[in-house]
Image (tube, rainbow, N blue to C red):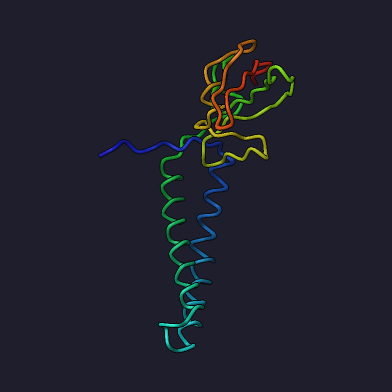
Length: 158
């Protein structure tokens, strides 16, 4: 049997997952069951698109509940700003300069469960984070991305 995958996340990220899980279990499940009851009342289930849609939604909700329960169970909390040392690690923000064009970007490295590049959070499994982990301020790093190779210089780690 394979080792369970750990899900790295901040306390805030774990709370969001727990809130979503609670909503799905207490409210969304009931809504879907009610939709199924209503769809059944329409009669013949073999050609009942409302019933099929409600059953599909039920399957999605149940799968998401299982996924969230596993993520919460296997959560490893990252304590922001308490990660050790001055090197890039999960839970820290890293500011870097793209070379040679000079664009500055800042990202916090988090677990995949709460990654959201639009909020400045990248997954520790992403090519960028994997290349930056363990590096220090001043290091120049080459990153293999799906769009090609880029080079960055680390300006700040906090």
